[in-house]
Length: 192
Image (cartoon, rainbow, N blue to C red; front, side, top):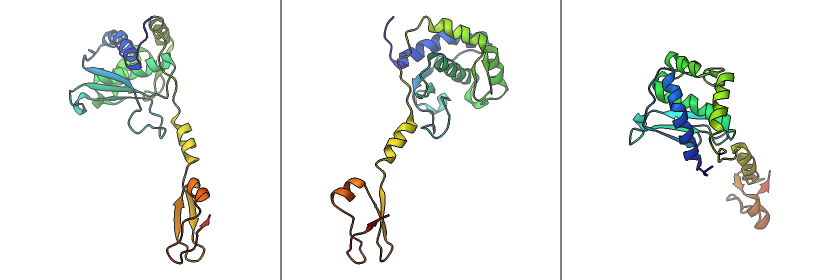
């Protein structure tokens, strides 16, 4: 099988599933893009794993869909993509209301309507689709690991013992050069 980029893989899966959406009763738009990227405000702060943006916010009026890079399982990526495709087809202005619910359930998306997953029949369809695609060219990202690593380089608090003046400095400078000098009495500050 030909090696694809993530966007090519996602677009191929989208094109294969577009007729499924149309068979569920709504036309599928032609002006779409799909990419692996963090949904708005999801960089580890909430659990968004997919997002669809109306074409009204895109300079070329393209509907933009994003699949979170925290997801690497091809079947899961496909059911997230299908959820976002339903938004694209019915219109994002409907949110998770009746038009969305009708099409999502007809396609076999189960679970809470804001956090769907492939039901048994849809899972079989996705397995058949995935058999025609190369592996999803992506490895799971974990932004929480970055935040943990970043904490190791956090600024350390130092305080003047006589006036209470507080400053922050990295361990590199504290260990290598020493504590900053307090403006009140020109004495080195104590690490807290």
